[in-house]
Image 1 (cartoon, rainbow, N blue to C red):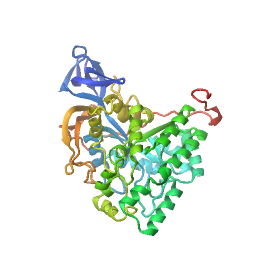
Image 2: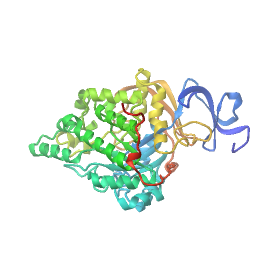
Image 3: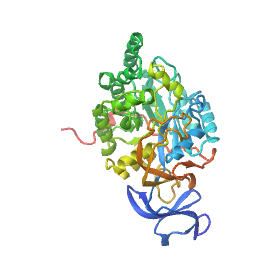
Image 4: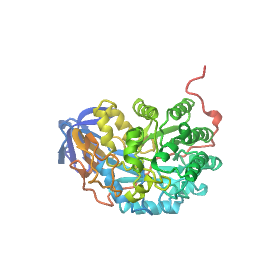
Length: 485
């Protein structure tokens, strides 16, 4: 204890606390930004400040490993202050941004400048996914960071120049092979947006030439030929991981075929993890929702059976984590999509409300609360090398936590929000289960179900604990989990 054996900075009493995969009734002692102890009231020191969490749940702060915060270069859409305020409002204590900013952090020099810029502005803790696109900079960035991951887009835009601009994308599989080999040497995770650029360019150019370009056409084109744009790329990534041994994290998983392929690869010893986005189970999986939202939906349609399969992957343990893919754009940029979605950037906002969307499903009995905590906090921490410092509530871990009121109901707002984008694709939807309070390292940054009181500059950069592997990778050494029949 930093003060004395009898007093700590803060006590949270009478809560149901998530510990080691289950909820237990306990009090939490917090001192110097760390969890100092858990137990009954009589077994813990008194707190200088006390929070009564009776009838509430306390979970580790959410870790969003996939947030587009648009800073620097596109701060008319979002910046590190507004983005991390949105994070705090939604129970996110660690926001990890993506590298499609200007300039993209694809060199060590740019990465350092990117981190310094964020440190001045962030309300919550933060980290970066560097652009893993420049072979000679991979080790230099690791030495300067390391980053949470190296993000690579397997695509470039057709018909527009943002958000998938030069410097962040690699579609050439030979280049990907070399980049994966180099990333493996750092011990950092390779994070990939799967996309078959050649097929997508062919599909897109046919639409552009015919003039069939509205949001409906785009939504169906992105999933044409039974989701081949995604599935082809994911199959390629699985093979590239097999021969390089890189820790691979695949984004935007939303087809049963690809989930099955990943499971098969895991059975053969491959290190592959997967992400699901909220929009793929709450927006893009029903055509009537896409019709209502138009360009304000993600931009593509997921066939209903694939949406159901994706939800099942979240529930049954197949999928590893939920990342928001928080992707703010202005209303003016989105409105273009009613006529030409190839000119309008895809993406939705999500940071502020995705926890409540999933808590509603917990209340509806469609997902266990414990499973939701794994997907949003514990698993991201483990995958990216920050567990148990983050993603857990055990003595010695950072006191990043959310007090959750499972009974509180609200209609999601289309007006009051922290994201600079100024629109909410879930506006009007009624949710049950809200984050009441968010603490980062023992300090309250959000209270009263959405009032952000954290200050810019409070957030700290979080580096993963990574151990570079020894020796070269030999794919012949990968053995099946069980011998084939």
